[in-house]
Image 1 (cartoon, helix red, strand yellow):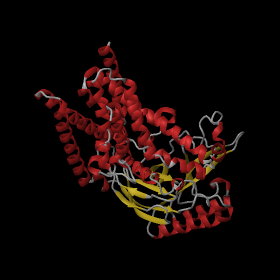
Image 2 (tube, one colour; image 1 turned 30 degrees about the vertical axis):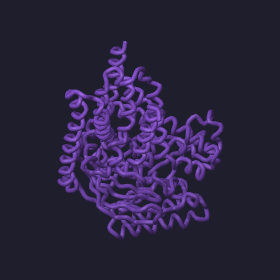
Image 3 (tube, one colour; image 1 turned 60 degrees about the horizontal axis):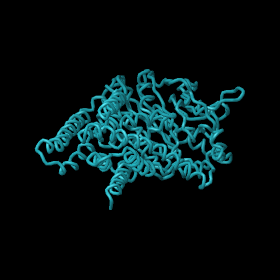
Image 4 (cartoon, helix red, strand yellow; image 1 turned 60 degrees about the vertical axis):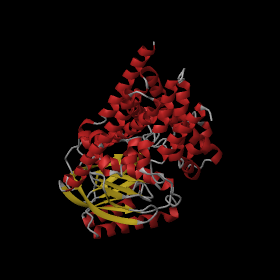
Length: 516
């Protein structure tokens, strides 16, 4: 096998390891070594003449294609089953999305190779910053798609995940990628012979071992102390998981039965002590404001029990043309509506179709997708004398959006979603893990109500207090707390990610000057 062919095998291995870093098929341990094969392949050309940047770009592209194909394979199912799209159209669209996302690992590889060419293999240790710079770009360009960022792989490793309270998910990405870079230095070490170069090869690994042990020790103590689980005012929350099949949701013959089941499950949650009840995203098989008779039944239940209810329902704003919103309504204990939150970050190809006049070949999808408008106000909702926020579905994967809620005064994070679209694929597990990290970042309890699961309560340290399985009807009641404390991340945001962008730009400028 040629050297270049072996490089592509390494890049492929990195893609596989990245895929296996996330649920439901993977394990967090895979993430720590995931980038090592790719980095070894990128550094190897520096010992040969030429060190072609095109080769590096293609290696990164290979890693990215495997990475995103392995973690986002479920998108084709969503488009074919719920978008009414033929498989021969859905597959090319999925391939196009995967290819676009793969450009970010390709850009990462290109920049790392450029820096290594200019400064030598020791420059591999800046790779974690370059990786995070590209993750930040993926989070914002063309509305962004920050799904399966590397840092999310560690959300269940609680001692390590506590780093998110300081530097967010991007800080975790830096740590995990830095271990891969240190291991790549070790892998390249045997080719070096002098004592100095051996220290260069193994020194970063020793340093990273100390850093990881230090973070884990600090994180373990933080979790063990759990100060915020005893702070603030406690409230028992009830979560209703209706488990309504997507195909039945808008069937007029099933609408009343679905609605009555939600009312029954809400009463059950209140009997179990819930002082606040959450329904999932778009849970009502009608528009809350457009069906006064059914809406009054929810209002009456709130009045009779003196319990506020958060209801996910679509909303229409009359005009020419009318505007539709994916919304959440807070029904107060007196039956009045205590404001409504309109989803601000819509799902492309789920709630609207970008460039739909250009994407003529996706006509079935354009027709099947509701043309929602985005809300423009981070509305906080009143519950028991406190203020809460709710992120609807996909919004919860945007750390800065959730941080904005907390900066505005949210004392409890809630998120409502409908993950029925994904079936039993990896997506519901990925989505739940990503939501859970927001609790650590912001130092808040997070309550999640999902139509088909996973619903649950997560404490400010990322511990899952209670959770449901997927595709089961469930009423879950547990304790959360209203908190006003603040993490370093909540106060300062993604400083690590933006610093990574600045450093990456500086490295590229320095590399250009050195090569010239």
